[in-house]
Amino acid sequence: MAASRRTARQAELEHRIRDAIAELRPLIPIDPCGLELVEFRVETGILVLRIEGDCPDCDLTAATFIQGIEANLRLRIPEIREVRTGASPLHS
Image 1 (cartoon, rainbow, N blue to C red):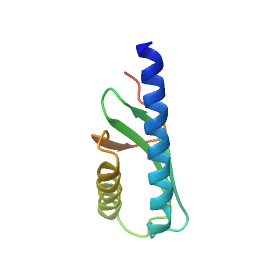
Image 2: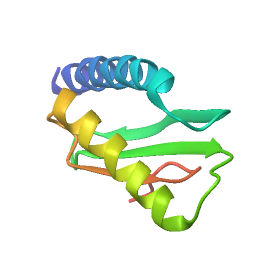
Image 3: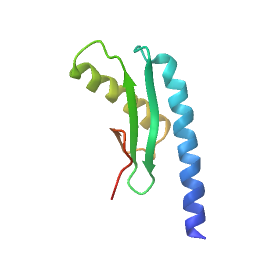
């Protein structure tokens, strides 16, 4: 029974994360910009996002951009403790 509750909780959080990402997309000044949920681990609070697009500036701008996304998502979904970027799911 605990496993089914965890699965339901995981699904509910991922749904909330996808909704928050959808609301952020129109605010992102990079066109085109892909922002996609790769994985969220309830146990650790780590969210992995894939971010794709043509950033016109340097890595510092990209880092600031990612920090803004993280701050926004963490305000909306307190279960998120950290945001990482990458194309692959987390492996324990």
